[in-house]
Image (cartoon, rainbow, N blue to C red; front, side, top):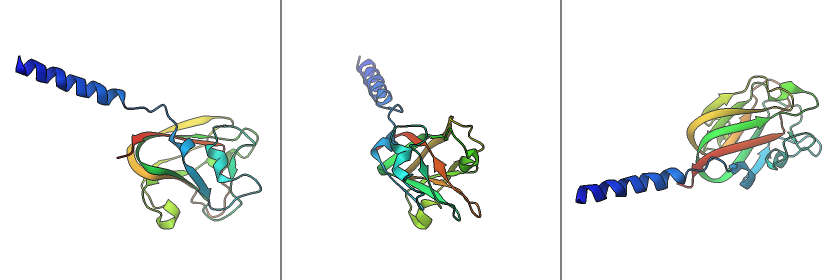
Length: 163
């Protein structure tokens, strides 16, 4: 009987742990965003305001290696990052973006481990990238091009954490 009680206890612990994983909450909505520079009123926070489409996007000026960074304000295991592209023009402004996740701010966080690199994100489309539970407080979008503009209409981050 003691072994049977132990089995139920283990099953109970696993079911409690399993139900506590919530990948439905967009962690980005609670974070703070900055970017390498800002074009007009298209600030970094526009990409984490819950509004997916133009004109509520972030937009850097034309510059060398533009970047955008989200501070999640705590440490998480990141499983999924989504990017929504603008719907009016300039689709290449999200092409070739490196999604980087980690805890370092060296080089503005652009040296953190890479989760993915975007290909063309169609207009008014949201594309998801699996990051396999990468650990980090900072989520960067880094466009390593000689001269470019980085535009993000919405960035969503899903994970578990506070470890």
